[in-house]
Length: 317
Image (spheres, rainbow, N blue to C red):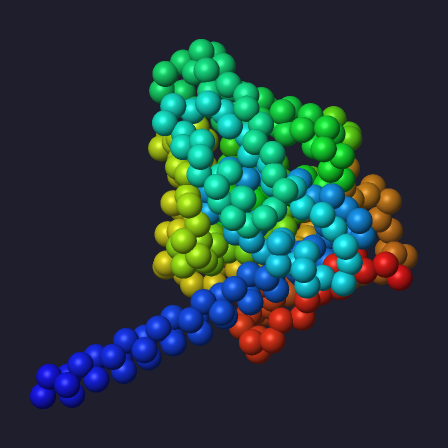
């Protein structure tokens, strides 16, 4: 009886491991596909680029580095990667973890040591959020480091949910329809900043990070602060996602399908010059009829076949 029981348990365990491996492979392919699509859609990486991957020690940046290293091997173009971590001298920061991890990967890296923690704590009163000053300090240091390294692109680990949160933050608290761009020129005009995880969901990244057993380093300087407005927005979106499945995907689709003629920004659309001779605007309002809604295509989250098309990421013509 015991032999039979042990055999059944062993078979059950093997089946569970097989299922877990299958699910991990699907997740990995989905993330790789979404990163490759974002790179191609927005022209993020080109032939002979040197990409500085900003590595904080959190789930997002670990996932980004992992996938970019895969694409470096698989993509039809050549580009280089250098991982950069900013050691802000936060008390209790485990300085040994990232060098050990990066050495195990064999990836080029640089640890930049700057005591921004003391500056932030000195300038920001206790209980106030530190983001504004901390981000400015980090940005200046990372731009300087990118210049020293000769990096042509700076890769940040923001994902789809970060972009939606930023959209609502700007709308609710800034009075602007403005999100987080997947690609931009830095404010000093010297660098191109990219967000390869633009099409990836936080839930996928969290699951991938857990299954990959990345050596996560916690941080209490930024988005983990309880009193941030971003945390309230995140909670709102998570609640919507539970109560109204598909709403998050629909909202992200809306960011990709903007109709300036149907907003009220006269700087964005020339309302003054409209005449009857212009004809109706494509996809425009037809006057008095009720709008119709079609189910949005959630291209980023669809589950196609298990194949992954790696990507003509900016392959030279």
